[in-house]
Image 1 (cartoon, rainbow, N blue to C red):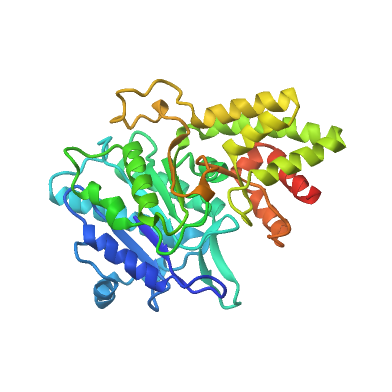
Image 2 (spheres, one colour; image 1 turned 180 degrees about the horizontal axis):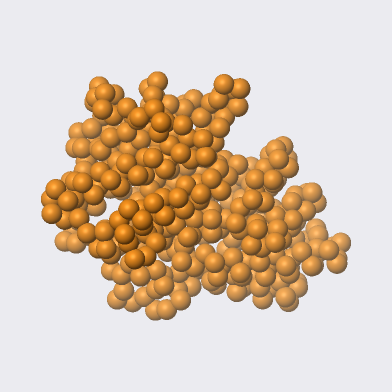
Length: 410
């Protein structure tokens, strides 16, 4: 399921032609017996449109079919209603198509689902749509989790499932989404997150390469972790050597214990900064050297942990940083011989990560928000939205308070 927002926003790169190109890439694969591809697009036509992507699909073919127009009462994306309706449509169509082939079984553990959110993303929101006031309305990540919670309840009730259903993968064909905050926010609703730590260049994911093996597997269907590794490799190779990119698959089953370790580190850092003026400069400098990219308000978590362990000079900070850094990368149990498994507890938090250039060499798969006032004059207003994220709530605002304090030191 690919939910595409191509609406034009002043100052943003136009997405109409990239959206059309990506539909052609999906059409190069097309839906088949093992794979159904559904797309909803807003911002190209006067009305949003949605369709199953068949082999050879193009935007022009979708536009020519009046049946692809989204019903009036399902077009408004206020509070995520349009996304909720699209997911419901796609799941219903998938069930109908599979039942017609005698294949549908809602309890089949290998009936995988992936939702991809496509478009410009920043300030913890995606799918920006112009409003009459001229200000964009966006689906923020708190609203997104509300949508997914509604869908869980609806699908479980309608299919009479014994357990709450989860997406296998949620992906972001958008910038800066491979973060601990977003992973934690979405962990109740999906098993894995596929996203980039840095900017995603136009034209975005190479859908023909990423989806091709799902339509025609090499002998068997991939598990979600295997798919993530495949997608990471296909993405980074598609841009080498023209553009520097990065893509990660994150194991959301480990998001909660990861956040607990992150809170311990935040506590240690906050205590040190409050008690020692000299330590303020040390910590601020380490944060500045751990950024994911120049002028981006994010730090690479593993790089931060390494720099803190080496340079902080504080035993409690060093210990907390090493524990958090190890948890990101180390597998909970040996995974030899288990690559076919989709059992998330055999994989580390960073299941797969790829980058393709020297200026992304310091990236290790996942980021944390750390604003820079010099490049983000709106960081105070963004702080209100950030503090509504579950990560900020469950860490009692410790990380938010810390990184905004560090920003003030610079």
